[in-house]
Image (cartoon, rainbow, N blue to C red; front, side, top):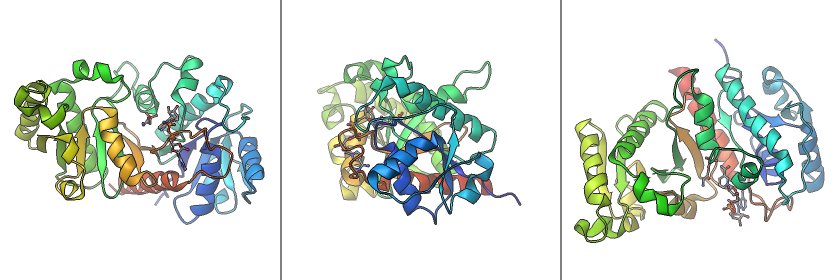
Amino acid sequence: MTSTPPLALTQGDPAGIGPEITLRAWIDGRAGPPFFVLSDPALYEAAASRLGLDVPVRATSPEEAASVFPDALPVVPLGIPVSAAPGRPDPATAAATILSIDRAVALVREGRAAAIVTNPIAKHVLYEAGFAHPGHTEYLAALAAEPGEPAPMPVMMIWSEGLAVVPVTIHVALREVPALLTADLIVETARIVAHDLATRFGIAAPRLALAGLNPHAGEGGAMGTEDRDIVAPAIERLRAEGIAASGPHPADTLFHPRARERYDVALAMYHDQALIPIKTIAFDEGVNVTLGLPFIRTSPDHGTAFDIAGRGLARADSLGAAIGLAGRLAARAAAR
Ligand SMILES: NC(=O)C1=CN([C@@H]2O[C@H](COP(=O)(O)OP(=O)(O)OC[C@H]3O[C@@H](n4cnc5c(N)ncnc54)[C@H](O)[C@@H]3O)[C@@H](O)[C@H]2O)C=CC1
Ligand SMILES: NCC(=O)COP(=O)(O)O
């Protein structure tokens, strides 16, 4: 019997809270699944010294990482020196940030890592350096494409024990949402959600609740026609396929405690419609999971938090939850 390989953590923006929450996740998580981080060991030694954290750091290989993990934070070097002033992002570090993601994907595809857990990136810093993808979600899908094949469609889910949400449109300006929202997009997103909740999360017949786009889900067309003409027909198609989809529900009453008992995941029509409720209810526990990929990827639900980086204020709970969930999903996948 082979044991599950360790998880691969990416570096994220080195000027954000990624280095310190990685150190804290190692301190808190030695009973959990082993992991290594793809970066420069010196970045973590500097962060540990700055914050007075007693964390030995050891350069290692993915294969040795699990045996290193009980005694030191395993760092698989990228071969690029990485240094950063906390809270002062620099596009010069973008190459290492991106390389860390690339290596993590390569390792998980080679079976040398069980899953990927990404540390936060600041999109605008990477854009300044020429990065052409909106975020991890879309970039990971591009990296997952088989030669000559289109990239798989990635679906963002933010998950916690009490609420899971999916934005149907993701990293786009609000004014673009109505034009992007099609019945095909909703149906394809919901199919991926239903499939991955069944296969990866073990929810055999997941209940999907779809929010409307407009106030009062359009009030019969008086407050916008998208819910009547796009969302409702998509739900009919999903039901015809045997997917337990309900809605379109007015979004303002979809997230209170009794409403949440009626579904396993809420599909929202745009980013903030999904992320405001979960970050309000479960900011410290929320985990960003990318569905639709041929490998497992989780992430904390928060960003780089430049305003507190390097000050010892950052909580590692969400990263810890992302590591825990990645470990459970990987164990489930290995057992299938
Ligand atoms: N998965 C990813 O890579 C994500 C990246 N981002 C990026 O992060 C950057 C900053 O985004 P913001 O909207 O400011 O969100 P943010 O999550 O970085 O910060 C929002 C607020 O929450 C606080 N906060 C965040 N994480 C915390 C933690 N672990 N412990 C304690 N307090 C914490 C921050 O100090 C700040 O006051 C953006 O450039 C965005 O692109 C945002 C979300 C996810
Ligand atoms: N607001 C969530 C977010 O921006 C995460 O994006 P990604 O980098 O995981 O695609």
